[in-house]
Structures are given as C-alpha cells and as structure tokens.
Length: 357
Image 1: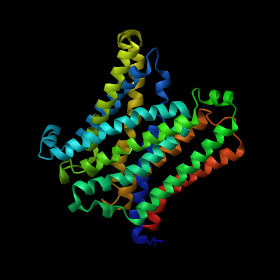
Image 2: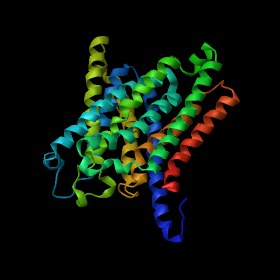
Image 3: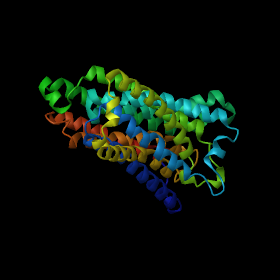
C-alpha cells in the first residue's frame, strides 16, 4: 500500500478531480438513450444515423478544434507526415463502429442495464489490453507493453470481476422471472442471444481505445493544452465509426423503404433536437476522458487505465438508469443484492490501481 504523506496530497486531489470529470462524462453517456425515446415517427436506422452525425462528426470535430493552437489548423495536423497512425486510428474507428451497431442490439435483447454492463465490461478489459499489445506489433521501440503494469492488470481483472457479478445478476433475473415479466421490463428480452451480441459488441468496441493509442501522438505537442490532447484522435476514431454506421443505416433505409423518414418535415425540429441532445451526451464521455486524463501522470497507471475506468463507470450509471427504468422490477432481493455488489466492485476498481500502484 502507498504511504499517502502530506507531500502527495496534491497529486491525490489531482487524481480525484480527474476521476470526477470522467465520472461526469460516464453519467452523460449512460443517459444518452433517454432523449431517443422522445424521437417521433422515425425508424431506428434514420434516427441512429442522424444522432450519429452529431455524436461522431459535428461534436468530435468541434472538440478537436480545441486542440489546435492559434495559427494552426486540423488540416495541417492531419497532413503532417504521420499518415500511418492517422489511417490506423480511422481503421480501428471503423471496427469500433461494428461494436456500436451491435451495442444497440445488446440493449434491445438485454435492456439498458444488463446490455451496457456486459458490452462495456468486455470493452473495458479488451480495450485496455489490446491497445498496448497491437501498438507493440508496429512500434516495439516505444515499449508500449511497459504500460501494462501489475496494477493495470489487477485493475482490469477487478473490473471484469465486477462485470461478471452483474452478469450473474442478469442470469438470475432471466431464470427467476416469467416470460411475461421479462417482456414487461424489456420487450424483446432474450438472455442467450443478447449475451452473445453483447460480448461481440464489447470486443469490437474495445477497438476505440486501440484507435486512441495509435492516435495519441496526433496533436501539436506542447502547443496543445494537455486537457484537449486526445481530442483529434477521438475525432478520427468516431469518423471511422460514422462510416460503418452510415453504410449500415443507409442499407436499412433502402431495405425497409424508410428513406421517406427524412422527408417528414413536421418532426424534423423535434427529432433533430433530441438527436443533438443524445449525441452531446454520448460524446461527453470522451470529452470528459480527455479532460480527466490530463490530471493523471502521462503513461502512468491511472492514465493507462483511464479508458477501463470510463467503461466501468458507464456500467455503474447504466445500471442506475436500469433501476430507474424498472428493468429490474420483480427481481428477488437476492438478485438485487448481487447487482449492487457488482456495482460496488466496479466503483472500487476505479480507485484500487492507484492504491496498489
């Protein structure tokens, strides 16, 4: 255990402040599906891509501009001779886009709480580990594997334990409720199908952090405020994800004959507003991640685990929403107790690495 002397109190407060900022972003992300319920007379594929315009293009672009010092431009940054990193960042964004699509399906079959718990938990663990591992393949001279310290590995393991506990609660829920009760909580509830999709979503969603790893040097160095340093890479990843989602959504528009949704002028004002709100809440998690990481030691345990911490907190708040939306209504006290234990373990996982690092 570390000896927290008065000399280290300032750094502890820095870490706590960084965690609070990340937590705020996580809460916003976990709330982003609430505005979608206010969207009227549009099919899923239509509102999904419109909210994606805000979540994955407009807002990340505006965020990236914050990393550009006076007298410079994003165009200059993206044409500055680091094309390999840029294309790899976009590529893993495209792969992350697959995770985003299946992520929505996981909540269709499991609900907001359980779907996000399993998908984001898998994403947290794999995203943290895959980034340095893949980076080591291309740039071994940077020694990225050194960031996977014992404290980081323990943090990932504790996070996955918390996710597993919540998964057990989900299994208990599936076995204890009647089909009618399951459908009342989640209309299309299907635990086996939802579990498979959620695991796939988590695996592919982990590519987001891999993209950030490849793109962490895409900034103006010391000229860029540390709080905004990862935002250009975030924009490239979300741009890649937008491409994946656009292809699929436009395919669904064609297949289902829903191109007419975009011509419904009477609902455009309402739907665009709530799509913007959903997109802003979703993007807040990565904006908060960039701000929060600036309070951690660069390359240190908390910095390496920051993505994992974000996903763990997303799970915590998604389960709060699950309770508010009555997705756990009718479950036994034993099931709820297991769920709460899982949430507590996830909260502990956010602080544990710093205590043992």
